[in-house]
Length: 345
Image 1 (cartoon, rainbow, N blue to C red):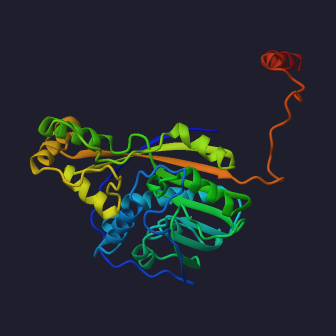
Image 2 (image 1 turned 120 degrees about the horizontal axis):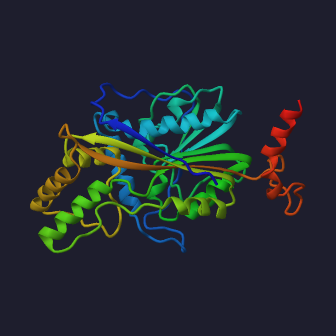
Image 3 (image 1 turned 30 degrees about the horizontal axis):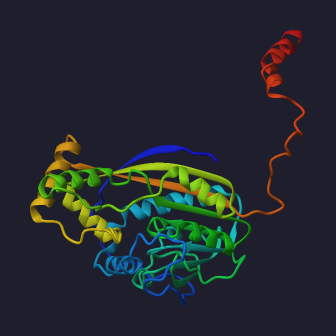
């Protein structure tokens, strides 16, 4: 498994004008959403999925949703770049947790023949961005996919899986719906995402109220992703990380954007309200600890990208143990042998 790390810097984009265009092609709606409160018996019930559905629906109903789409569009374009890096076309693809279609808008119909876009928020599906690829909208929960085995050549997911209660089950279902030799490309928040906001709120709440509650949801560690993908049945795994830093005028503007993205905390153990004095203190702590020279404050988003393939006989496989004809000790002599050969010439 290969792990790479890159760092990127973005500025909060100004509000975008205009109404999002309608999707081209066929649009049908099917339902695969789980009933409220349902979960796998083995899953930890960390997130209120019904609340997350309401948050995403609220965000999609805003007059200018594109004002808050800058991060999801950026990550969606990077997922699309990874799709183009694979030298093949995909007749049938699934975007899991598609939102307003942040990946499909960057792909073309020569690469993807038909796109199924699935999300738990019906308002997001009604306001998807324009794409040249024929699409089908599916109202479905990432943990309860309403698709048959061996259906899709490609499954993608951008900034959605970090809200899933049972990530192993979700990855197993993605593997289930992929065709043999199909590929999964995903991106999710993880690690130290929003550590500046988390630390500022904890310090302020401890000082003002004598203790703190979790106000930023827990994230998966990068070391766990490879194990989870392997356990779900994927092989030829790649996991890499990006750090995207976005600068905001202040902490309250950051929190406004998180709400507009539909990324507000939905953990069951969250604290519903914070006192006004605590919020003001947190904003002051944020500025004092992390302020840039120009007066803005940074917010760090750590993005985990993952690639996994479903097994097929045509895929390259490692040689059998003990089949090597050259030892590692002999490999160290290659340079000397090559230099001797050059001298003889």
